[in-house]
Image (cartoon, rainbow over all chains, first blue to last red; front, side, top):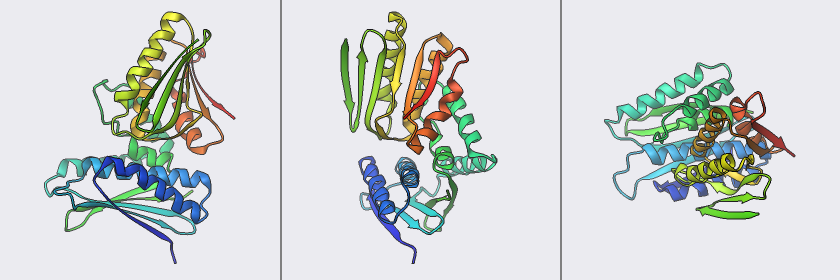
Length: 161
Length: 123
């Protein structure tokens, strides 16, 4: 049986570090070596940050769901959050970024290109767009996503060292 | 010798001037939503002090436990500025930690051929 960790949090930035620490603890307990623990914990944190930033939360009861599944040869992280029915712009941006990363044979090259781009951005620019490409490069993970019929966005990252 | 410490959430930056180098040491975790608001002014001031004093700037990440991707933006902007303006900056990271090796070795694209801007892993 695949060990799984399920975490539910409100859309509160201060909850995110706890998600990272619980993920790291779960992975350590199941024997993932330290470099893998650091990588997947970072992936979980970046995906949860995105969920808090771009999710559509209409009331305090709405939560973000984080699932970490530890299989023998891979670890899958899936983060679910509600999106607005008309939030086409953010979903298109997510789609473009995932496709852009997939266009590189080596995620390291994508990461370097993104670093160069960010270094030339205006100082007022807040969004770096580094999170997803960091997941692919440093997190050694393959990204995917879908939106279900209840407008819940599920973004997954499969870590394959 | 002078030393100033700045803290925000779980991140602490200590800026030291020992008369030879200006050192910015990072400890803790950088997890803020907009960490640049805290980090960028400290790095900019340290770089300016390095420039006017003629002493090199060392940005030391060896003891940082974690940083989110938003933290990388103010770091690469300061490296880019140093590269363009002729400053001397060395970034130190812990080579034995794989996440640090991956994260910081990528910053070698900001290194200069004359060694003014250097990214260096230490044991």
